[in-house]
Amino acid sequence: MSAITGTAATPAADTGSNSGGEVPARRLTAEAAALQRKFPPRIPVGMPRAAMTARDAVVRDIMGRPYAGEENYQSRHYRRLGVTRMLDWLESQPGASWQERWDAGCGTSAGSADWRDAADRWLKDSGRIAPDNTRVRSSLGTALGLLAGCDVIRLGMDWLLASATPVHLAADMARIRDPDGFAALEKAAATGTASVSTVRRSMLQVALIMAVKGGLVSDITVGDCLELLEARARVLGSRDHGGTFFYQLMHAAGYFPAGAPAVVRMLDPRVRGQRTAAELIDRYDLACGPVRDLLVDYLNERRPGIDYVTMMGLAYQLGLLFWKDLETTIPGSTHSTWPRTSRWRGSRGCSTARRKPLRPTEPGSRNRYPACPSSITSRSCGASTSTSRNGRPTTRPGGRSGQSPARSGPANSPTGRHSGTANHGQTSGPANDFPSSRG
Image (cartoon, rainbow, N blue to C red; front, side, top):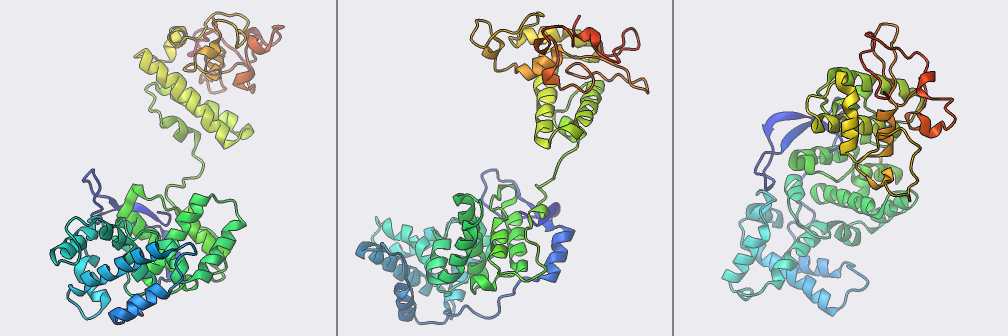
C-alpha cells in the first residue's frame, strides 16, 4: 500500500471479509502519480502467448518445463492430473481461446469466491472424477499457477490479490517462466539484510505482476510496481502486508532505468516519519489539559538530547502508564489534585515512603510490581515545579532542570547534595499551580 493515500468515496471490490464492510479505496499520492507519469505501467496488448495453443501442446509444454529437482513419479502424476482436469473444465466454458474460457468461467468474478468449487462440481457432475474425490480439487490451484507461468492465461490483478490461489506462484514463475530473472533477484537479496519472509513476499509481488502483465522480470516497469501498490490498497486496504521491498529489490538488481527512485517506502501513508511531542501525547486522550500541555512541554525540552525511540518511551510511560492510568484509577484527577498521586501509587503496589530503595531480592521490592515501573514512580515521586518567564507552571517530572528523570531524587543522591531543596528555580505559594508531591 505504499504509493497511495487518501480515502475515495467509491466502494472497493468485494474481498469477502468477515466484517462485511467496504474496504476503503485509495488514490495515488501526488508524488506517486508524478512518478507513474514518468514511468508508465505496461498495457497488455493481445492474447497471452500460448492462449491459442492446442490442448495436447499445452500439456506437453507444462510437463516439459523444469519443475523441481526432487520431483518423483507420484508428484509428476499429480501435476499432470491437475493440468488435464483444469483443461477439461476450461473446455466446457465458452470462448475460442484459453483466456476467453477462463474469463467466462471465473476470471471476472470476485477472487474471494473459490473458483475451485465450480470446477470441482462440474468435474463430478460430468463424471470426470468420482463424487468422493478430493485430490483433484487441491491440484487445481497448482494447475492454475502452471498455466499462468506458461503464459496460457493471464489473471486479473484484483482477482489475484483477493484469491487464495494459485499456490506457489513465485516458485512456478521462477521455474518455468524466468529462472535467470529470479536468480538475479535472489542474488540482490543476498547482499542485504532482509529476512527470509520479506524476500519471499517480495518474490510473490514480482510473480503477481508477471502473471497479470506477462513477460519476464526484466520487462517489469516502475509503473507496474506502482500499479500493483494501488491495486493492493484498493482490494486489501488495511489488510495489505505485502510491503515495498520488492521494488527496492528490482532496483538493486538493475532492472529499473536511471532516474527511478531506489525506494518507494516514503510514499506509504503509513510511514509518517517522526511525530511531534503533541502527537505522541494526544494518542492517549488525556482529560486534563494543563497536564497534557505540561507533558508536551517536557518532551519538547528533552527532545534535543534524546533519540526518537527514547522520546516515544517517555510519552508512553508518562502519558499512558502514569497520567492516563491515574485518571482512570482516580476519576476527576487534575493538576490541582497532584498530591493525591500517592493514592494511585499505593493502588499500584508502589512504595510512597521516602526511604532507601530496596534491593530486587529483598521482600517488598518494587520490582515485584511490573504494573508500576520504576521509571514512572521516579518521575511521579520526584516531580519538581518551577515557573517559566511567562508565568506558566513548568513542572518537570524528575527533579532538577535539565536532569534526566530516571537519575533524580534521593535514590541516586545518597548524600543529599541533589535533594529537592536544591532545585533551581523552584517556587512555592499561589503562583505554583502544580504543587510538588514530595510533601
